[in-house]
Image 1 (tube, helix red, strand yellow):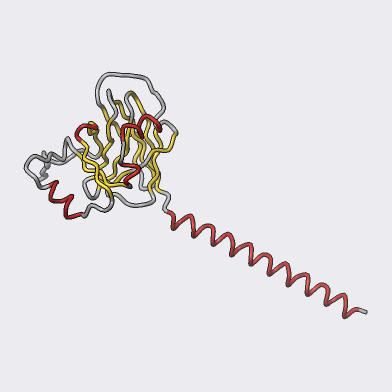
Image 2 (tube, rainbow, N blue to C red; image 1 turned 90 degrees about the horizontal axis):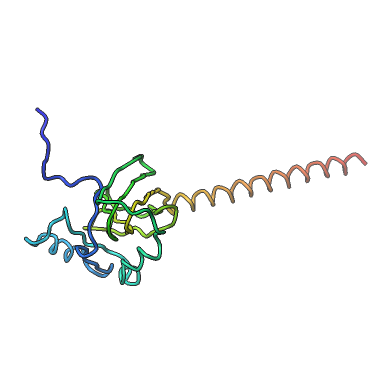
Length: 183
């Protein structure tokens, strides 16, 4: 038999700004969990965002500043266009500024673009990802680029350059020694 959980949250959905609770990183996970366990908390229509105090101070301003204007349409629709391990593309249509909540695990290293412009990614409801979106149709792209990978690539590049310089130096040293011995 195959069972379906009818109460499961969708993979991505919109949460209106007036249903978003903002907390700083100093807020403990226990405090957030207590709020989420309250009888009046509805995870399908609410979100608790965790972020730096300066980022969380005004999400509506962040949406206006980061999201370019886009074509207005009716509704509040979220459609996943492409989903891979390292990149997610989502088409969002919202009548008002909102939070796009992805029920995938939050992890450092993800970057987000709204219509080609960088936007912040917040940790939501302890373990999910959230991206502010403006009104209208927006194309959201999330890409996984962990800092550890970038640092590893840079160190590898430095090591290759060092190896090439060492080989070049050894080659020059050997050829000058051969010329010296010929005399």
